[in-house]
Amino acid sequence: MTILNHTGFVVEDLDRSVRFYTEGLGLERYNLVHSNRPAISSVVGYADAYLLIALLAGADGHTLELIQYVSPAGEPSDPDAQARRARFGAAHLCFVVGDAEATHERLVGLGGRALDPPVEVYEGLWACYMQDPDGNWIELIEDEASKRQPFTIRQNLGVPAPPANGKGGQGGDA
Image (cartoon, rainbow, N blue to C red):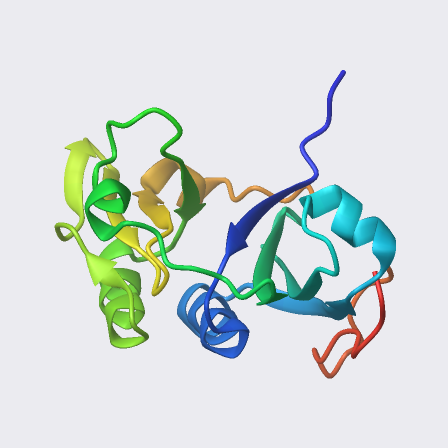
């Protein structure tokens, strides 16, 4: 069986994106890595790559990896292509939240771009798509069934749990 390990988004400003996902969605940052090892250059396919990476976890332990390319410098996507969700290769990451409308408003205040506000798709299930500050698509779902029986399994992150102060690992070299 294959195990999902993480989802990765390339971002322009790591601090801004960490704020968006931690303050806006309640994810926890558990590691911050500065990586310029030769192996990482092989992985990403750029000679002399230098990346800043923040690892965030949701309540279920799924990791969101935010990557800021320092070298080579990151480049923006074509906004018209990024806006088309029906194109091949388009992707989104879905978050189950307690209040889709309030979360949507909070994320817009943190630089997210709204498509439409949450709508009731089925009885007891509200959803909406929006973009993070870098144009990555996210979906918000508020589900009455999830509220009655919250998801409690936590994925093994492969690293020690963050300290009680919530600051996670500092520095490091992946």
